View (tube, rainbow, N blue to C red):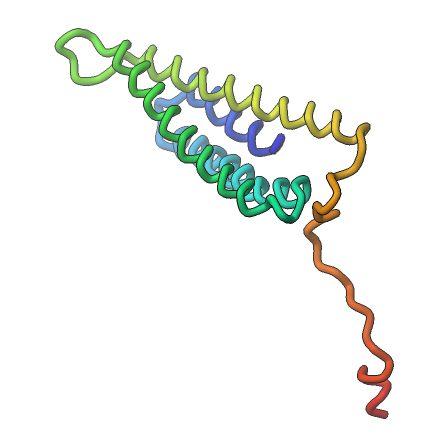
Amino acid sequence: MLLGGLLVATAGFGLAAERDHLVEICLATALMGTGVGTSFAAMPTLIITHVPLTETGSATSFNQALLVVGGSMGSALVASLLAGFTPAGGLLPRDTGYMVAFLLLGAVSLVGGLLGLARRRGRASTSPAPAGALAAVLPVQVASNPATGPAAAA
């Protein structure tokens, strides 16, 4: 989560400072896509490892609902912010509107990443995952059965 927040924050602050050339926009878009993808991919694993198994379905569904609501609210916020920077009778917002929108994106993403880091550090000193939660979502090494394994065939 920290990596995703920092990548999106870097992209937002970068676009607030420079967005005159296509290369700058492409680089920021790549950073933003990587950051959002990293964060979105990490959430189900975090949920599964910190929620009792009986609650994972509802917890991951709630996560999906929050993603949709957050995306809708963010889009509405940026649209109204840019509308506020559009001159009367004008078709496009002033450049300052885009700068403010990207600064807001960078700030919110940075705060989100830092909250994830603070939460992670706070959790390290407290008790382990709740009862019934998976310890980790990693491949499990299964020992072969000596009666049915390769040695039994010899």
